[in-house]
Image (cartoon, rainbow, N blue to C red):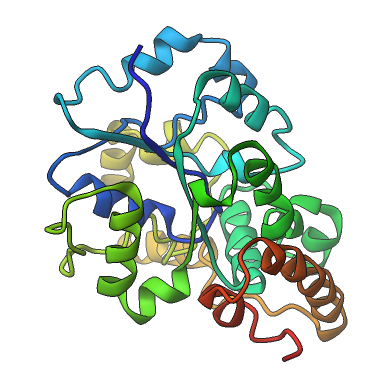
Length: 281
């Protein structure tokens, strides 16, 4: 049965879409469509069976390194069965875990949920009522089950900050970990992927009333451009929300404690300083 050689396992809002696209552009690398099958995490997708998952790799050429990228795999406590399902099928895959400053990740997570209409315009209420905004950024906690299952040597920890600082050098390290040829190289003219730059909030029945081509054509004919622009502006988050200092202090305390757990697994890793500028030195 066709199986992946490697998986990008998260974290959410840390640049995995860009990294997956970069890897898919390399000779001898096959990435699944969809990019995020979420097979091992989501119950309804796992129920499709291993034949469905294997079929995602059916078009890979002989000798290709096969991979997928599912951020749901490091979303505890939302998806508790991921590692057990993965170890039952995959003996020794190479895993890439991409992180970023957990505070900025949390804010990006909130913006994403707000744009999807799942969270209110009050970030304080959202942070305090939605445990996942914080827990998905507790990287030590999230990666620990994978370390226990496969060992730290099977995991490459990287960060958005490292790739931004020196994409060539960090991509070379990732490529070497995955076993890509020395010719593998970062593509510099590729736009960043999955950017929520507009931060536009989705509306109820968005697919039918907004995204459908017939509705779009009618809207352009019947609704003045100035009114369309006004409505668009009302649905757009123009500035990143600020977290009140007291709430930020509480979140930072939790992230600093989790950083210690991550440091115990990956001591002296560059991401520890780059991603935690708020941690005591």
